[in-house]
Image (cartoon, rainbow, N blue to C red; front, side):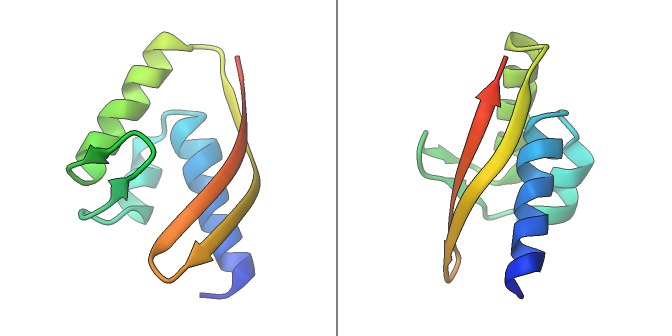
Length: 84
């Protein structure tokens, strides 16, 4: 995947998926075997969607902005700003 496409996909996940609790974005862009390592969330995109909904309930006025990222094969690191 080209760098610009990776950035677009990551921006959609961070800013729309997390920022707007847009679960359709998650369904479209995240695989079922997804693992979030920072918080050890395992169980695929359904676990991710539940985490997003929990964040949305706790922080109703929030904004996520992707600032940087790195990709190494199937591992992705993102740096974002979270504002409430």
